[in-house]
Image 1 (cartoon, one colour):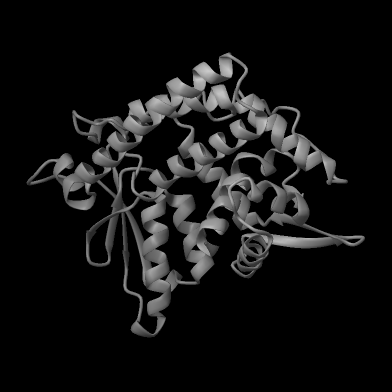
Image 2: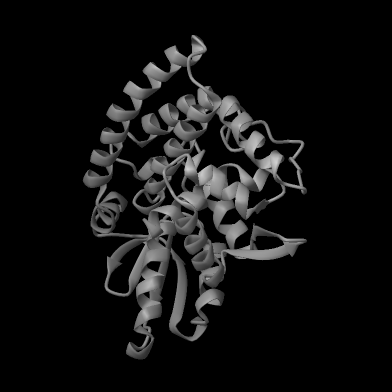
Length: 293
């Protein structure tokens, strides 16, 4: 339950809290997580772990504890949001980013963490110690090098592939595209049924704001797992049977019918116990800032 609670807290920070001053009272957070069956102890343990990992910081105001994202946390959330709400693949500049590293055995724990970070950022494992991406990830690599203090072990190249095979062969070697397509198909089948059902119920006024909050949060929570498996390849490198774009369109349509009532419920919990009530004036739940990109 601990890891699931922590993961759900990330989702709520990313989809709600960061639009409301980026700070929340622990009591409000506990109330929100109860909607998903997470108890107070699980929330406090998860928050403690996120503090130790450098994702959030705390501050006391009177007898209340508030938690807000660190710079590291904000950077991760912003990167995730840009990718989650993107409807169309990027255009490609025809170049490959090649990252190579030789991290010594005594830093093995860093190597394992770095591997997960690279997968999350969209790199593909081309061969042992060699990762590739068609996307410009210079900023992300710089942050990883600083985070793990590994500048002496890492080299980043910008190159073109001149054969003997073609670029799509590099993709097939570095990413399990068939598995990703299967995962998207599962999402599309499951999500389309719920979308049609909820659209009808919402139109009839038979779905509460709290229920919409739960469904919208679960939708984002489930969909953001694709960040760990979908590298966000440009359209020139995608297979003909790619269904990721259809999944993105379905996700955004479903998100929009849940958005406003879900935000109303979040605001009711957040505002009731938060002395620091603050909402970004540009934030419109239904027209998410990333949906049109």
